[in-house]
Image 1 (cartoon, rainbow, N blue to C red):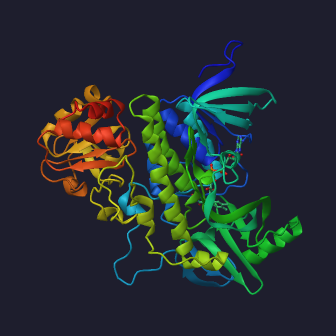
Image 2: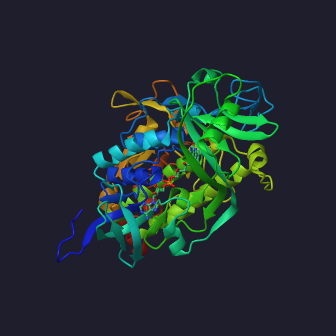
Image 3: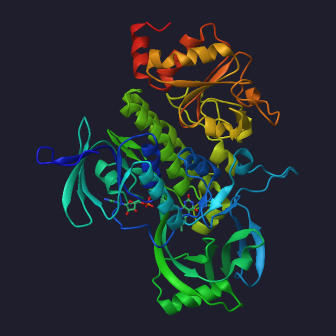
Length: 542
Ligand SMILES: Cc1cc2nc3c(=O)[nH]c(=O)nc-3n(C[C@H](O)[C@H](O)[C@H](O)COP(=O)(O)OP(=O)(O)OC[C@H]3O[C@@H](n4cnc5c(N)ncnc54)[C@H](O)[C@@H]3O)c2cc1C
């Protein structure tokens, strides 16, 4: 980062991230981990005292793991998707469990996302998680500026200039090569760019109250979300697993402290417990996806790009964190000159369909339709595990993901299909037990079942400008548990799979006559490898 001087009126950086809530912080953390000079600004001095998200998926935790942030958060509660009960009140009569995805008729229990990851989901309040991301982003070199507001911005062919206000009220300018708009659902950046949104739209504004109460014993059944169903009172009660509870009303009425306490006690029911009010919140519920996730040098991420209502475990923050993870390696590759800027076009191509898919899946569920009164045409329902770990990317950064394929499947049904996340398997590498996720989420990697691919990978940096690591099955990776790693990656004898730095499979090949040429050709496409693409154009790559 270069500071402003009399001769140089700007503070310069590679990426300016506007919005330092969960998605902006994740973006800064992933960028900094790849060595990208990054400034992230947040207009508030700290995280919102009223947490929103609490449910984080295994995939989110996998992405954190790639930057050395493990899930041993103090007070975190691990488990599968939250379970919800319809109740008269928490300490009164309980009715049936409300399933998010209807139970299947088969006797075989449904596989969960945690069956395909080294992680279970985690329950941790957003205001406890954000400081950990902030700290990790700073440790990795991001410049995190709290109480700093962006007032205006302009972009041109070479970058973006933003006017910022410091905590002391001083105004200064930042010049960045790229800007990431993580400024939330009411994003002024998106508005100024004139990017419209589509979807079910704004449904309703609701209020909530956050309080503390000693009620943890009511969580022992495994349910941690409760639909309060009384003749003249419907609300939603849930916990942040740290003594704090949220009561979400279904209306936008302002209530004073006495009224809030009365409603809380109605939701708690017959048992008298001490309650302390913490704060209140007001939320817009709806479903809106931006029509474009980028404009020139500006990229939309998180709620700015897609406002999705809370579901079981939450698509909002989780989807936003995956946006950040998808975008960070692409920005890093382009800024390093390894990939041509066209690679950045794949961000919209890959992430927008995921947001639309999740939007449609949320509103295809009966219980959201009932609680929000929205009815959409029915679509095929995908299991949570398919949505979280079995989504398919189709873009020029993937070769071989045709339009005939479904947008999501259970992870073990893909068998190494390009466009999907490389599967998690426990393997032994360098004598240590590790997950394939740990091996495949840092750089371009070839997983190969024959040695010529390793020799081909070794020459790629010189040929294409992109360094490729090779992992030879049976030599570099062995399965201590007897798993068929080749089958999990769908590798034919003599074949190979090319994995992107975000752990997604970019391309797969059977045995090739000339692995070096095949790999260079693939990289020219899926990595927009600047040098290889040029060679291809000039016809010098065989
Ligand atoms: C009750 C509730 C429960 C939820 N539970 C879950 C859950 O369990 N799991 C899940 O995945 N999701 C959940 N969500 C959704 C989740 O909270 C959001 O998706 C997430 O907060 C979006 O993060 P974001 O960083 O994109 O946007 P935001 O959190 O809205 O942050 C945007 C930030 O940008 C800052 N900003 C805006 N403009 C500027 C500017 N000009 N200069 C500087 N800073 C600026 C704002 O101050 C703000 O901090 C829940 C939401 C609610 C309401």
